[in-house]
Image (tube, rainbow, N blue to C red):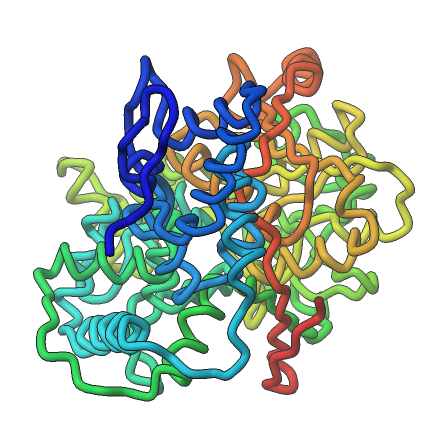
Length: 517
């Protein structure tokens, strides 16, 4: 027996399901828009009843034309991920979509018997097989995928950290690709401490759902699946649903560190520090010191930023080279007496002497991805704004010279899971009220990191996120107060484009994961 047909106007005699799914029916209106418009404007009760009957009977056959489930009907989406209907589509900007989804949910309550139909069995088994084939791929193939994402990698080593913590270092590689104990690949960085499952890494960088990432990776590698065997769909579903509906934060209690061996001389700083406009008083206020000739560890000739956790414990030191990369190699070329050879040959010889340029150097064991620089000063702050920048010099300028006291630094371009946990700790009860301003560096890495930061913050439940774009300056450390003030006044409030997720905290000290809300 065929579908019912309409008996009025332009759609008289036409199949209800076909009308509802027409991409264009009149001018620029879709079939669904036309039907909902007729329902709202018509004074004929018979017309209203017919449209109501259409929605009640056939809402499950409405085909979604956007998003991660593009091309699937509401009925199919419900079988895969009902929460996507309940928590996302019911809040769509288009009224007619909200109505048809809510109608479907009303007349098709969630099944509680735990049984799965053939479509679900095949779908979950298909994606599980894709995941297994990706995990079984060679490292060379996985590196090929990473290059397709736009990152340079060779023999498991990234040219730069994909989260941006070492973008200014050309000759020291911190980030790696490796296969873990669970037989899946992961991407990690020794410098910032970030680590992510490879497939979830693709989700993050491409802004994909877990299944979209599987499809994209499979397309790059030419992976196909056929003759999928029967599997326990209930177990498979747990991973796929959790991957898309959870945001995992990382909790680590970092050990306290000692300043023994640094040899800090009070009031002594290199010229490069003063050229930035800072004074000795500024440095002491922010606990910034210089490791000079009396330094007995790897921080010699570095401007050192002391890093404290939210309990004001000293948990790390980040040292910035007092030299630029060019100055570093000029210094060593002179010291080693390298003459009458090209610059490239000089650099090669200097590096053979183990004198590679490192812009930033971290205290052994300190993971910068677990802390936000200057966050300890926000613990008792009553201000309803927080400003997030990249590096420690950016924080100093914002706090000391521009008057934005509630500023923290990421040590890179992207907020890590540990840093997101700190923000959650600081603002758990005021996430709908607190205003977060993200200062975007005017470079490719800064713009890439911005959208990912917005995504993570909105999934964590923060509502008021602003984009601050500095005109005429690369970053906050180089900007004038006038440039920062203008960026603040013209900051753009970001629309809510990512739903709040279930929040799970992974405690690295106990090895346990727990849902906090």
